[in-house]
Length: 199
Image (cartoon, rainbow, N blue to C red; front, side, top):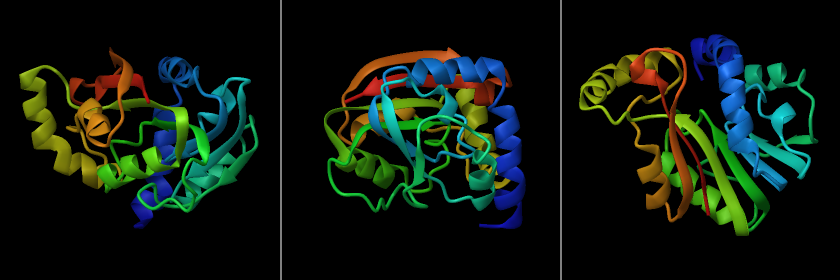
């Protein structure tokens, strides 16, 4: 990981995605979480204090050591680190009750492999909860998302603007049970959100 991605991006992400409008969206996305939770790309652990009482433990996947250090200030359920790469989880099959991903599906390099891994480690009856920005419904915005994704990837540690989150989740074998399209404050190329639950 280069110095910009390791030292700057985690701090900026912590500030930008820690604002109250985003926190309220996180709370809604995480409300169904229960049992043992796998947090894909946990970052500075902004999800930890928002976990509902039904959560007993959080297993975090996070490659950035800076983000892990920032996470030490968070409180919530017990937190254990379970690896660096969501595409190659060192967990047995059917190991967790809930998988959560908030603002990380845009960045995981091998997203399809990570989603397959999430499905593998999720117990029968478990839920995959997601909140992420992605491909907007407006064709004009989509054109700009495709144009600017290369710049965004260089600035924000590989973040894609144009991923159709719902389609990628269903392609990995999940069935989406609920899906809401929302917006967060900011330019239209980054503000279209997918908030939902899949089984």
